[in-house]
Amino acid sequence: MNGVIFDLDGVLVSTDELHYQAWVRLADELGIVGFTKKDNERQRGVSRMESLEVLLEKSDRQYTPEEKTELAERKNSYFKESLNSLTPDDLLPGVLDSLKMLKERGIRTAVGSASKNASYILERIGIEPLLDEVASGLDVTKSKPDPEIFLVAARKLNLPPEECLVVEDAAAGIEAAKRGGMLSLAVGPLYETIGGTFCARDLSRVTDWDTILSR
Ligand code: G6P
Ligand code: MG
Image (cartoon, rainbow, N blue to C red; front, side, top):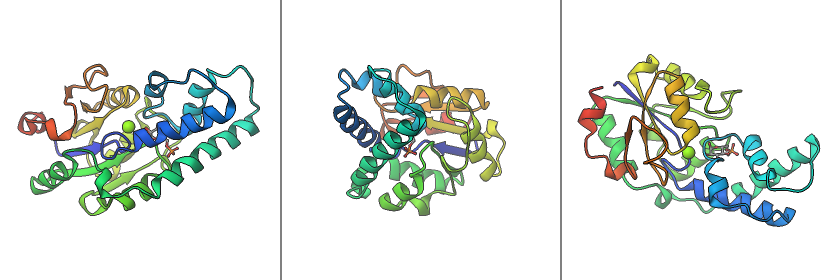
């Protein structure tokens, strides 16, 4: 393995929770009841508009495409509001040590995230200098589980997909890695169930990087 591609929300930083809270705020405003963490699991890794569709499954009324655009923008404004208080303290456990260890070993690293806010988030948490490349929602037209985002990230790293490991917290992201011909490391609350090649609760719990990187 010569490269590692990290998803962002829920892998490097705890913004997965902020996405959830922004959707809950929108759900409350729309009078949508019964939108739960379980529904939110299906929004992990999925684009903003597709995440909105997951929320609207719980709504009794139909929305026009124009209304949906407004709803997605509204959710994004709530999410961005919450990003203003994001700091390096919001990095998830083990992230800094893992990035430094990979750099020391000469492994190239990238972010592969569906988020159009990825650059802003990386700036706020201050880890840009530890990453070689960033592929974000602004670089792709297809959403995970399509492998496009990871293939773009691998291309930016100048590495063939099979030499890259994907680190993901979302079922859609693990599937995208598979379709892109990449091995994966599943982390986060669903780490045991989303089918990664390897899994760990978070990056601080990865005990055997040697085995993973030798694949
Ligand atoms: C990530 C998150 C998703 C989010 C998507 C788009 O993949 O896991 O929950 O919907 O990014 O994020 P954005 O910041 O562009 O709305
Ligand atoms: Mg994620």
